[in-house]
Length: 251
Ligand SMILES: Nc1ncnc2c1ncn2[C@@H]1O[C@H](COP(=O)(O)OP(=O)(O)OP(=O)(O)O)[C@@H](O)[C@H]1O
Figure 1 (spheres, rainbow, N blue to C red):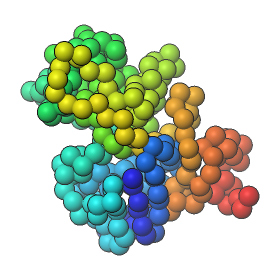
Figure 2 (figure 1 turned 45 degrees about the vertical axis):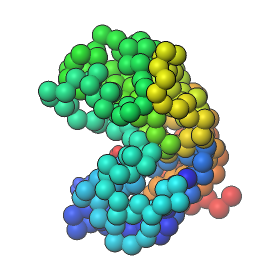
Figure 3 (figure 1 turned 120 degrees about the vertical axis):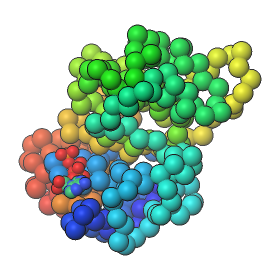
Figure 4 (figure 1 turned 90 degrees about the vertical axis):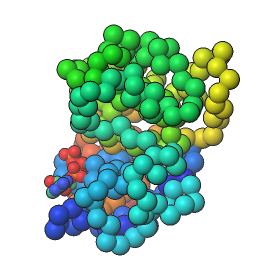
């Protein structure tokens, strides 16, 4: 699904990612750990194609297509979706309209989806305007559910979300990954996708691991991917020994 080969990325005049190799096969969820400033968000922004992240070497392939220099909107159309750590407020655009735009020509029952996410009361507000941290995450998940991407990049999905609401968030992530979206049965447009979805998830706390199934964990350290193993094992090592010891282990 996603293949990254020998990727080097600069932001401004600073090299942020060095020789990153990563393979996320169809249907797999990979977890990305790493200390503050190690380059996790930059990696996601580069995969998504945001400007300012200059690829100086390497290649990104998605669903067999070379997307290394593909514009952001084409990557989104090809099936990459992102949940931002700190998404912007968009004045003048209601969340309902945004969700409709994300759905494109897919038939999505916005009211049903938002009710599922307990977001009904905020649909007519401008995107992320005056929303709490948890409400912003639900708004972003709503947009992802409508977009129905083949691969989702989730940047700290649990940040700002209270412990009770993480279960709801985890459920919505699983909906996006495993079961596609719930459709209005009277709607004839669109095809329910049964294709396996993939995910790359950044987490600091690991709380989200209680709700989603992780196939593998990776540690990004000083711009390099240094470890690849069971995500819970990595989390345990980080808790017990810290990042420096974790990436130094040879077990
Ligand atoms: N637009 C930018 N201009 C200059 N430096 C940047 C820019 N974006 C990121 N950086 C720098 O690149 C490094 C990696 O940042 P990044 O946000 O990718 O790290 P991160 O691992 O996601 O951190 P955190 O866990 O704190 O969110 C940091 O030193 C950051 O200051």
